[in-house]
Length: 464
Image (cartoon, rainbow, N blue to C red; front, side, top):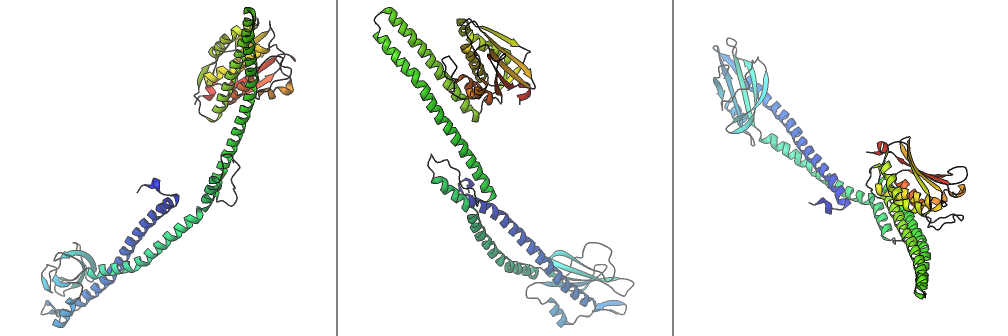
């Protein structure tokens, strides 16, 4: 039977019935053994009485033991409708004095007068139960052994009959248990059916929580987890919808400008006018490409918050040099001095591609907002099991009330004064969160400039 195709109700019934059937079998075997034990004791007492009665018929005549058993008593002793009965009287030399069968002695041991012992043996190919009773012969201390044997048919029949009479109500009891368990499981699983029906009636837009009242503890826990999942899905879908709306709004303006500049280029009358319009068109295209790349980076970082990511030790010095080297042309175009400062050799545990994007956005943001001829500093220092990436500039900075808001996507300060999308710091914040780090924005010196610090756990503290 394939259990993977069974319902939960059937599986529970199966797992409950198998132990019950096993215990019923053990109970039947134990019952049979107990009844057989007491049947043996009852018939053993009867054999013992017979042996003692035979022993009472031993007489000593002229110095020799004789056994006086009338023929009628002999026939009565052997008569049994079910079992075969054997008896014998023999001396301690093994010579049979009287009896209908020479019976095997019991296990060898020293016997004393008046002692009775029981044992099993075989006679005529059948298993028999024997009793051996020892009596003195009255001649020179000799002993006589009175043995009575009986086959086991009555004993076994009694045990079987008792088992049949006891197993019948037990089977009825077992059938009742099956019905009660089946009904009880159905009643116990009714809340699951209600939850199933409630979910089946939902539309894909309905993420409201399921009712948790009146549920068993186990079902309540499952429903609570489902409600928590739906709440997270609701927040994620809301964030995605907001992101799509904001991205559409952000992309609409440069695309509109791009179309307008393309029309102006088509209307240009001279070579110089055409080149000027194409230059504007190229600049707008570059801004649009940068915006698209930033949107893609932010989307990837947000998506990775709930997914697996390949982390490995990342060398901090090599990471900073690679990022600064890529952004040096933009700094030279504005005659901005970029310096790198490393306190010591260190490494962080993270994803190199995302960390590179985080630093590139911070450094690019600093270059964009730093006036021509200014300075941008890039460094890293190690403290308290973390590595702090620090990017400073001597630009206008960000007012303290807005430092938390600029970490949100598309938010830009009214005093920014530079074209941008409002995504650079948001991307850095998402990637820092992805690496269990945090970003802090403060003034670089006094009230001017900006210092962006991102703390990421060091490799030695985070490596599994």
